[in-house]
Amino acid sequence: MPGVFSSSISRKQFLKTGALAAGAMLLRPQATQAESDDTSTHLAILSDTHLPADEKNEYRGFRPTENLKTVLPQVIQAKPEGVIINGDAARLTGEIDDYKALHGILNPLAEKAPIYIGLGNHDHRGNFGKVFANQPDANAKVSNKQVLVIDYPAVRVVVLDSLLYVNKVAGLLGKTQRDWLTKFLETTEKRPTVFFVHHSLGDNDGDLLDADRMFAIMEPHKHVKAVFYGHSHRWHFSKQGHIHLINLPAVGYNFNDQQPVGWVDATFTKTGAELTLQAFGGNQEDHGKKHVLSWA
Image (cartoon, rainbow, N blue to C red):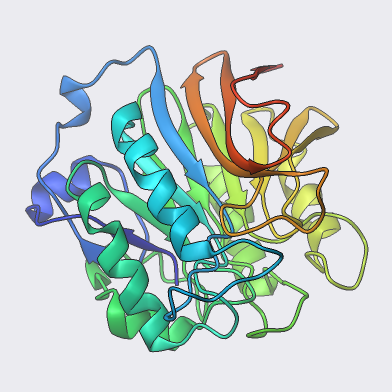
C-alpha cells in the first residue's frame, strides 16, 4: 500500500496536509499549508529504489543500499516539502526485512519531510504494512488498493496503486480504482493535478495493462496535467494529448548504460513544473539539467 513515513503528528495537523488516503504513517510535526508558500511546491521524486535486506546485494555493478544512502543527504540538503518514492521500494519480492532496512535508512529523511511511498511489482502489500503502520483514518476506501491524495497550494498530487502481482512485471489499476478515479476527477475541485503510478504506460505485457482506460478517464479533465511513472528505469518525456508523461530514472540501478541513476528535484507552480535531474550513476550527461513543463 502507498504510505506516508515521517515522525509523529496530530490527527488535526495530518488532515491539514491534505493526505486523503492510506498507508504507513510515522509522521512528523510540520508547517500547515497556511504557513507555506502558495506560489510553488518543492518535492523530491525517487523511483525504483529496490532496497534489499542485504546491503551487499548488487545488480549491474550497483548496490541499491549504497545508492539510497548516497541520495539521502542530497535530498535532505535540497529541503523539499515532501518526498515521493514511486514504487519498487523493495528489491524483488518485498520481504519484511527489505522494508525494515528501508525504514531504517529513511529515518533521517523522515525527520525532515514526509515521505510518500507507492508500490510497484517488486513490493508486497502485506509485508509493507507490517513494517509501515497503517493509518485507517486516511484511507480512501478503494477496495484492495491504496491511494494517496496530497493537496499542496500549487498542485494536487495523487499516488495510484498499480501493484498486481509480486515479482511479476505487469501492473493494473483495476476497475474499483478506475471507478474511484472517475468519481474523484468529476467531483473534486478543478485544480492542477499530477498523478504518480509505478508502471510504464505502453501497450506491452509488462506495462500498466489498463493504461488506455486510465487515460480515457483522465483526458477529458484539463486540470490533469501530468503522469509520473517508473518501472523502466528510464529518464524520458512525452505527452498523451494535453497530459505530460514523465518516465522517472531509478535510484537502485539502470537497465542499460545509456540511462542515468538518480532522482528528480521538482518545483511545481500553478502554471507548470521545473524538473532537475540529479544523477549520481550511470549516464550522468544530463545531471543538473532542468526540464520545464508548462500546463496547457
